[in-house]
Image 1 (cartoon, rainbow, N blue to C red):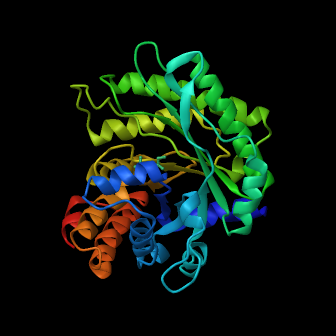
Image 2: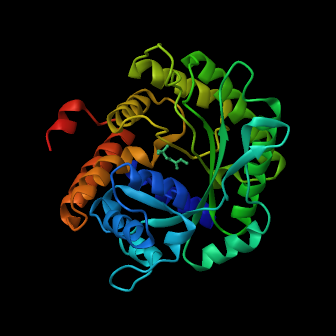
Length: 337
Ligand code: 13P
């Protein structure tokens, strides 16, 4: 079996998911500011090392996505962060795009950059211990967006990235994120997400990406955050499954959703419902940032020396998400800590 397939299998085994701890320094500053903690290199390391040395990394987290700063940092005991992750039996991943910038030709939209010099950076990350990677394309919804230009340009970049990641021996996580911002309906989200994902796979095929050695990281199908529409977990699951079954090639082994601004409980409940109803060949799991870290961050900010307490909060969340990835989560389990 190709090494890439083994990596995918290990990340997704038994309801495991991905901890997306790859916030850029700017995004991490926003997260830390929101709980009144100064964003400096030391504090970012303390919080992340706390999470990465939790029990649930071994039992629930198949892969940990890092940012460039973190993959080069050393833990308090002198090991590198990838060594710490490996000791727990998890796999190190790395965000390799360099962020979303204004798209020339459609100034309200963004194009993700980072292709220049990517081959060399990928080889460096491999040497540091990374075995999977992430690239995020970002799309807005309105009556005129996402534009054909944004759909085409971002799909092209995602596909060129994915081909280069596989060439370097690493699994690409392909993340086309249709944002929740706006007053659009769930049906609009369904239609636009379908168009975005379909176009991504057209480009991935063109770039000869081996689908079996990839993971898709999409948004779930939800109404916009400013919309008055309210839909059930059941409807979210049905629309999300339909969108993916219609547009993702069946050779793709797994889908690891982003949480995108949903609360921890919503993201868990929706993932559970998707798995209860899953009649596709795809494994459906999580690659959450906020929906795994929010409570832990809040708890930690009250006393940054309370490592054990913070880890307990994180472990609970990771366990709940892994149960949801198996379709075994319930509100009573959630509340019976
Ligand atoms: P959220 O789960 O907070 O959306 O983050 C996931 C992610 O990696 C976005 O790129």
